[in-house]
Image 1 (cartoon, rainbow, N blue to C red):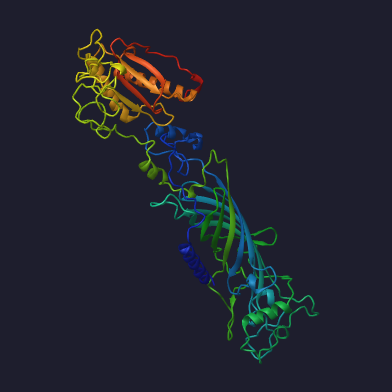
Image 2 (cartoon, rainbow, N blue to C red):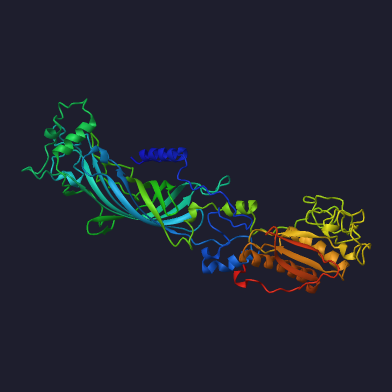
Amino acid sequence: MVNKKYLLLASLCSLMATQPVFAQDVQTAKWSGRDMTYRGQSYDVLDSSYVPGFRMKQHRKFMNHQYAFPARPRNMWEIGIGGGLYNVSGDVPTLMAWQSKKFRSMGFDVHVRKAWGYVFSTRLQYIYGVANGLQWQESRNYRWNPAWKDYYNAAILENLNQPTDPVFYNYRMEAHHLNLDFIASLNNIKFHKARTGISVYAFLGLGALAYNTRVNALDDNSATHKYDFYKIVGFNNFTPEVHENHRDIQKKLQDGMDDTYETDAENERDHRRPSIFKNKTLQFAPSFGLGMQIRCSKRINISIEDRVTMPWDDDLLDGQRWSEQVYGSPVQTNQNDGINYLSVGINFNLGNKRKNVEPLYWLNPLDHSYNELTYPRHMLLPDPILPDADGDGITDQFDKCPGTPMGVAVDSHGCPLDTDGDGVPDDRDKQLITPTECQPVDADGVGKCPCPEGCGTVASSCGNIGAGSITFDNNASKIRPAAQAQLATLAAQMQANPTCKVVVTGAGNGSKVQQQRSWDRVNAVIEYMSEKHGIDRNKFIFQYGTAGDANSVMYRSAMPGEEGPANVAPPFPNLRRD
């Protein structure tokens, strides 16, 4: 009966619970250098090509930090085909496929499925099934069953000693199902890994069942057209082989009977049930079940599923509603028949992968949140506050000369600037540019050569403007938050020394691309200082394409009398990056 199928469902649940995860597409978050190009997520939530037009308003609000939740992306449709074991749980035992050399108790299905969220989806499925059953015990109280009573002598209650014909109940049921399933995915929300290779789901179906059940009651090779079942099974009611295996009896019956199923089984067509397709009984048939899908790729997965169908108030799927009573009239059974369909299928995801993600029941909705926490791209972060104890514009983490006096110009390492490299810092060097041939110098930085005009005086006040360097990400020209704090210090120093100029020098001369990138970065620094801090652009000397670290831009105070352009045309504007 139907309760036996619950054991099969429980076994299937156990199998899915213990099944190891394989075919899993492990996606580890990766970043391409310093340009922070994200490659590990199921899809890029910042990419508008996945967002349908009616959700673009939400996407724009999300991108502008006006709404916290990204828009739901388009996702692919799933279509699939499958086949498996199809049997009726009723009054007559099912004859399974492995119990016969003939094609018995099998079915196939096709479906289309669409996800409406990360948990819920709907599926429209068509199932065609053929179920066979054969009773291995003889029956005599069949005078209430129209499929048998007209051909065999049924037991007469008033004369129990009258000989009666034994029969062996059998049936062949052909059915068409059309189901609308409401499916809930049970395991795609993950807290400790990005995704899973196995999707487990439960479903509830509402559908229609059109079926016809027929009985093999007559022998076309017999003159009387009825079977001599005693002859087929090899014993009679008085001398039965009680120790004979019931499968052996079923095998003898199959060998001794034809396969015509020529007689309509008892049915309620055009009485309690409407008919369809001329000879099919139409029935409302709710169903439920469990399944799992094993992901092979973004396009293909394999499914294993078990569906239990419970037609509404119907005990005639196997053509038999009467229970056998030895001493009395047959009585109608109280338990309705059911259908079990255990299937294996292959499914395909359809849709343009550039505009559609996988069906949402394969994606982890927490994927974006966890990756954003670890590798923020969209998150609003406060400007970093980096310690700089001596106020020279170089953070303590990178300052190789901590404790530099206030106002002393420093290089990119935080050490006092020494323009001529004579070992005497510029703030104490009385001969700021000492030729190499005139070195070594004395404690005041004056060389051995005759002191030129102006030698012996302390460096101009422009030495109060510190030197430093700005580091950029690979291929990028955007000012990073760490550099913004550094340039704020430079702006304060220039505002305190309004007559001084600052030389901004970009490195990178290995190729045309490097030269243009060097120009872009120098221009970005000068524009940032002009627009953000109001420093006159003419206070800068624009230099680019020098030797050195291609990812850095140096700045320093201009030497007395040092001049240069504040605006320079880009060398290769066609190679500029956004």
